[in-house]
Length: 425
Length: 168
Image 1: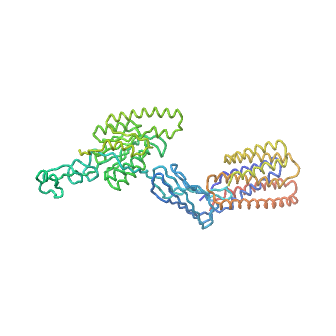
Image 2: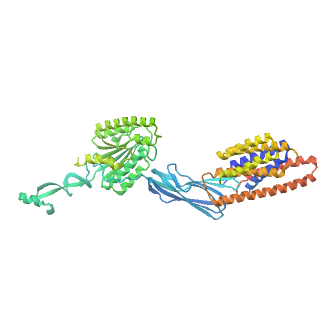
Image 3: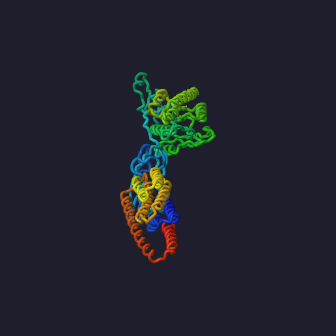
């Protein structure tokens, strides 16, 4: 541990030397006497404690929370030797804000004593944040000497995107082979009556349709349509972003993806995720809470990475993007590469739904709101809607979302138009 | 601690030279020094405060030369103490601006400053007594040599004690 002189020490030395110089130059004793307190100030710095043993522990109240949540950081400083002034700055990532308390404090600790304090942090943005780094400055009482330390511990928190509960989601056109919530055209075990046929040996007695049997004079059984699940792949456009965090178009896309994943997994569907950015990142379709966890973890670091490369979805293995999957794309439609990829998916026969996150509204919210801004946004909105209309002409079912209206209300239009027959190819 | 407490030593810094020799040039220099000091306090810049101290000391030298006559030892000691206190207060306020400073820190720091001021006053009085005794014992031709050597020794000792001593 080696201390260093502070700027105050140099200022003091300057004034001391200046007093001496002027005293000799002017041949006046007053200036030499005036230099005496400054010299005593230097001498007082020599009386400080030299050996300092201490330990700093920083803990957080929870390591996993949702956007908008709060976390409490507890800091404890224990000192074996006296610390005249210990200044501690707990580093807080810029995405987080101090809600109450102070992350920078100055404490006096006696030998063998300790100091505790805590502060609350607002977590408005998703991500993984390190809260285990603290800067410690040990000051002399004279303020002329300082010892600095950087202490790092394991104290990481994960802020997951907030999940909006969706009761109604767009239904897939095609189902898979596992049990689920969608009525499939395939007959078998189920609860939805589908067809009648004559009784055959092996049929269950409880499937006999007594009304039809009485009318036709021979045994008839009711055939049931199977309830099957579907594959849903969430395709997040991370090629571009607009607006300010935590309300940027990418943040809205991540929140929508989290809500859709949660809703489809609750319906026993298999849900996969593809981040279409500077590079492709994906997790294969799966079901259950483990998959919900995997999707949440995959959504956490979603960010734009600049690249000239256009990722190719046709190079993904079929298990990642199954042929019968419902693809829900979430995009601000700012990059041509993504719109080309969507058109390609539609051309290959995929069932594609586009949730177009309006970059205009997202950007408008982060602007001052002048007349020129408003005019520019209106022109941009016209151009953007023309692009959306062109995609609809390609066969993409699309809805526009401004991030203010509830996602369920936006999706309800799609749910109505797609309700009805769910087939299996 | 509010940075406005630092205005007290600024008042002393400006007041002592003007009180010693209230001439126009001294008032002008001290006014300039006060502007620099207050600017440094408001901006939280140690450099401006130091420049203010340097200019104030020029003004004090001008006042001492203008006044002539006997040496105002008490005024000089008060002036030096004001310089030291100005640096301490302004730096303390600047250093911990925005931080949560506990009452214990403030109490201990104020007690330290008061104790140091008392010690400085005592040492200044003791040194002045020694100086008076030496003035009687040392012949006039050797006084300048003794004074210069003492000043150099004090400077070297202060530097070594304040910033040059390695930690164990």
